[in-house]
Image 1 (tube, rainbow, N blue to C red):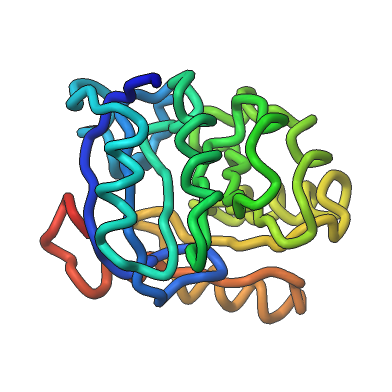
Image 2: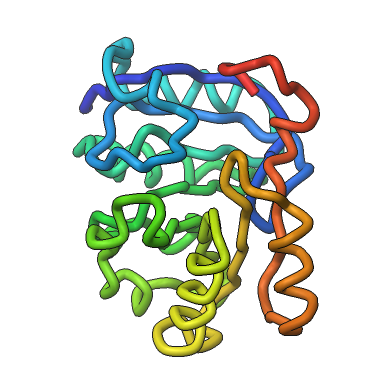
Length: 213
């Protein structure tokens, strides 16, 4: 069985996505293939403890949460992540989430896993790395997250929704760190946008905590 480099495993409240607010066990894997301007988990880019996939699953399941999210860094940079997702998806009574930056193929992610996929806006500095073919692989219950730092990002996000997403899945828009949340909320309301406005709940609840939330 494969091993994965793990940054941390912890219990918290789901702070993003359409499942925001639910208790959730998090498996944060190490390593990332992107470097977004507003990244808040750079501590997960390097290091990590090598742990067998079965042990990772057992540790997360033992936390007893109704859902488990595999995140990073970028989880799909490690080959064994698909094996971990498959193992977790077999557990009864647990919803499994994968948070991915959208730059790597999601073709082999188990059907039972709820995918939360980023689409990188221009001000991230990584928009050229969006793997647009992934959108066609998403289920109607999966979701796309776009982080918005400016009016230009917002206009870009609306264009992506109209031209590429076309109602295929759920969509969340979040203000980047330092951006004014009320501006984004106002733009979305004025446009009657079919998307969810999202603040990072864990940052509101525990503003001074960098890890384990």
